[in-house]
Length: 97
Figure (cartoon, rainbow, N blue to C red):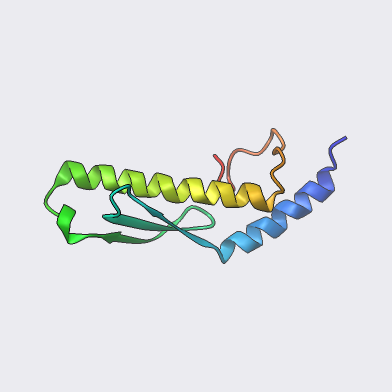
């Protein structure tokens, strides 16, 4: 049986730890880097001058960098949770949605 109280306490601890966590994602060509907080808030965006003025390349690089950062955050959260499965009622609010 799933221990709700233990899982709830673990989630609270994880939420507190994520407040102090940042991850950096990069576009595949490394022209854009995005720093996300542990709660998926964009903290910083760095753009290489070489993509300025190239709208499509910049849009693609931003999306890649954000997705990379979010994936890294998801992996970090799953590692912190012990690689287990999440309870079905979680709406993805801890970097997993």
